[in-house]
Length: 378
Image (cartoon, rainbow, N blue to C red; front, top):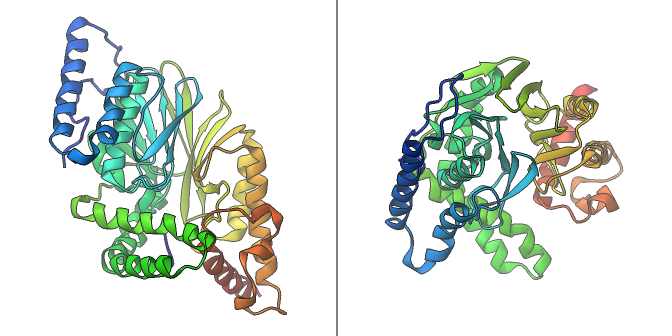
């Protein structure tokens, strides 16, 4: 996510990841599976905070007892949105920051986006493999922003896929983002702590809590960070198939960023949209093009998706695509208003539909960007 400007926990490759293998359920394989799980619990026990044992271990134990029904992590909540299809939504105070998801293809599992923190990504892999009872074979990076790809280091034994445009951006804009995070985030965290302490009302403090978490997660994760780039790219569409379903990756250019990918499940009418959709949150506009974003939203509507997993916020429906369109149009209208100066315009001017949306700190950079963008079109 832009803001103004070790060992894998499930590390042993127990299953063969060749594209065309038959799933085996031999006693030997089940014993190896249990041995690996116990080994990882022991590894986890060696690293946990003794004052916070229950929260850190419970996710492993709970999912082992009721594997296909629940997984508890301090970083995200898992929501079953279809048979073998799961959304992993950021939990306040956790290290995910963005949303992700995973899909059972029948003999292997696909993970969509990998969070910002390797600790959250470890839980994501564990949840994906235990709840689908299949190994992760594919990982998709929707775009280059830090909160969607820095967990890649947990999936180095899988096939990591993104668009060609995103791979190029990871090496350029992504590196710039990493440099900014390294040099500026500690300073920004202190600034926001001061603002939080000086805030006169609860609403002002609540607006800052997410960003305090965001900056702290970056600081905590940087020492162990290993940037892992995708090995495979595609241009427009890529189909991945397993015994029980076929899914499609679709690329869109210039909307939220220079290149964005979505995961489309045509039979289930489910789409993982990453940051092309924010639900009940102000989106971040300055890395893309409003025109391209509006066009992309129309193309996504044409797919006929009924269940939409956004990059941030709760699982959405078609109406949330309409609200995104309405938001971009509203910011554009405010930016084109020549009668008001920037400091006179607040998120409240967007209208009733957006009054309770999170990430209101994005409004000012969105407005400034839109003014520059409109000026460039004239």
